[in-house]
Structures are given as structure tokens and as C-alpha cells.
Image (cartoon, rainbow, N blue to C red):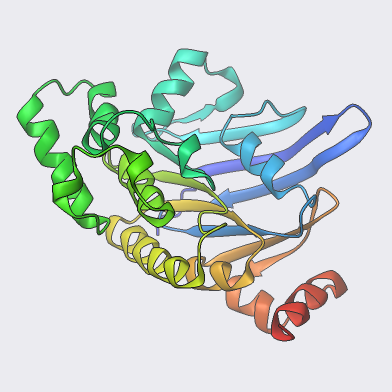
Amino acid sequence: MTQTPLLKVRDISKFYGSRIGCRNVSLDLWPGEVLAIVGESGSGKTTLLSCLSTRLAATAGVIEYRMRDGQYRNLSHMGEAERRFLMRTDWGFVHQNPADGLRMTVSAGANVGERLMAVGDRHYGRIRAEALTWLERVEIDQSRIDDQPRAFSGGMRQRLQIARNLVTAPRLIFMDEPTGGLDVSVQARLLDLLRSLVADLGLSAIIVTHDLAVARLLSHRMMVMKDGQVIEEGLTDRVLDDPREPYTQLLVSSILQV
């Protein structure tokens, strides 16, 4: 890892009137690092992810991203077109429900190819070849390239969503409960795929999950949230094996008792 963070976050807060979404969250995300944000429902983890990915405007605080030229940009100062281009090129977002991240009425190949077209590729043969390559990488039979995602299983849809996000070689991926709602066996296969892709491509990632087993398998570092605030953070194994805060201890012990 380099000594320069890819993402710098300082005192991010989001309020909904008098209700706290998240409050005074700061972090640095390093190239090639996977950060897990964990907590129970209502802890603020999804609100924080939405702010970090600019899907939701923060009430206060600063988020800076290091562009490919090495310069930091304040994301709140970016125009809408510039933010959208960033989301199509340097960033990816994997939704819990793959239907939120796919176009369900066009083919699998078109879902992957659209992102290439968004960055200027217009050569049909090259786009189709790249789509075939990525279907294979995410363990979808290449013969399904012309099938629509609505004909796919939940696990296949999620893998297709991953291919759609990674085809433009982004540097940062946001993931919101990427294994939620899947059968245990399907979850395991998807987690193995995600772990290998993140490592092979040297991706940075921020993953929101309530599942501590997912966090342990995928992340280097973990932040635990409660009532909109980060109450504990550190290397994932350290937090899970030796939690310091009573709330974190309760989370860990509840998993062990299942």
C-alpha cells in the first residue's frame, strides 16, 4: 500500500431533522484496502455508505478522493456530471438487491457492455468480447450472454452486477450487504469470488454488512457503528477476537451463540 489515502473522510454527519443518520465519522481508506462497516439495523452504516458514495448529501464534513492524476478533489464541490462519470469509471456500487444495479430488461452482455460504452468504447466486437470475458470471470456460462437478468437466479444476478461494476477497472467499490438475501451455499460462493477479485485487481472497497463472518472474510479493517457513531475500529481480526466495547462484545457473542 502507498502512504497516500485513496479516500479521506473528515467529520461526516447526516441529520434527518432531529434524527441522527451518522455523526462525526472520520476515516482514511488506503489503496488495496477493504474496510467493513458493521452494526445492527439502524446503526447508521447504510447512511454513512450513501454519504461516502455521494448518493446522499452529507449535512456536514468533508470527503476527498484522490483522482488518477494524484490530486484530491472535494466530492461536494464536484458537479453532477462529474460525479456520475466518476461512478461509471473509477467507482462501482454493488447493491444488496441486484435489480437495483442492473437493467433487468436488456441482456447480460448489454448490462456489462453499457458501462464500457459509458467510457467511450463503441467497437461492438470488442465490447462483446470483454463482456464474455467478464461473464467467465464471475462464473456465469458464456452461453447466457444474450439472456436477460430476470431469467437468472439471485446469485447469478449478483455476480452479473459485480461484472458490470468491475469491467471498467474501477479503483473503489462500495458494497451494501452484497450477500444479503442469498442462501448460505450461494453466499459462500459469492464471497469466495469477491475475495479473489478484490485481491487480483488490487481494489479498495467499503462494505456495509451486519454479518460479521462476511466482514472477517473480506475486510482488512473494521468500523463498528451504534446510534450513528463509530464506537470501535481496528484491524478486523483484532476487533472480532478481542472486542473492547461492550456493544461489540455483544455483537460477537451473539454470532458465537448461533
